[in-house]
Length: 352
Ligand code: KG4
Ligand code: ZN
Image 1 (cartoon, rainbow, N blue to C red):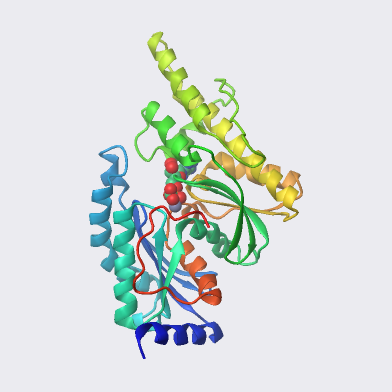
Image 2 (cartoon, rainbow, N blue to C red; image 1 turned 90 degrees about the vertical axis):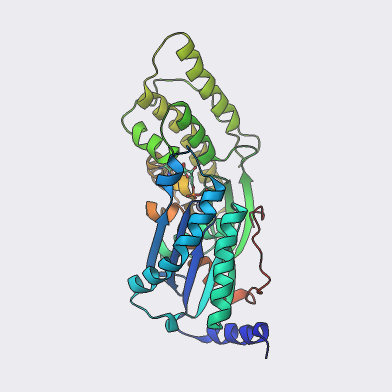
């Protein structure tokens, strides 16, 4: 029997198995990560090799360097992921990998590694959409969470509000028309001379600032659940240049706090409205921007005030990791045939 036919049989057998352990691989941007996840819900290990220190020298992610560092990190991460899980390689039932969206060279390193692993170990291969992975981090953080629910997904490249109708079944309710929220954080951080990665450091600085000190325009809201951050970003950057040209000084903490307030208010307002309007009554957050301290507080406060049950994963599961990929992969395995060995990286794969 050829590999693909064998894998279909193996996948069918796994769907009947009590405990399914998936080794998950993530390499879409600047973190290489591997994890073992049990039944889509239990994190057995979470190994991450961050490249932040290297990219910080250049003020942002250098794709070629990212790819090379992923290649070096992948093999050692397997040992770490198994050791943390206290498991042997023989206990792995399937391998999952992020196939997109992301940097093509970076994605290819993980995809090639996972394909080789699947073939060598004679295991099913599961291809995971990175954004679906972000949403699925909530399954690990909240073992009781079941669809339907609404999720805000805000990362470096995406800002979406999605309705998770069933496992693996999504409806996009709204999205940004231009910049992603994380991208806006990173660009404003640069103007404040906050080093890469801008988002988390700007967040920290904003905790010390007065969010009413500067007045920025409201985030434009082109559709009911859509966002547009580019107008705000440009206004903020122009105001910084203007103050400096006049010889004035910017209070960086106040500036960061005022900007963060504008972004978070827009995200929170729309996400809460979507969860209320759809009747889902459950609101989850996901993606790197979900690590933002103010967003977490505001979603909790305003979500509860609107009668919603709110799900906020720990910060480490909001930013890129492989645990979320393993969670999404399990539900993919239950519903679909495994991926083929011809799997390619899909850098611009659509949201869902
Ligand atoms: O999900 P993620 O780790 O990678 C992508 O898939 O893009 O998101 C990274 C983005 C970056 O733009 C980063 O600045 C932003 O998330 N981010 C934050 C925070 N932590 C990460 N933005 C605001 N506040 C934070 N605490
Ligand atoms: Zn991500």
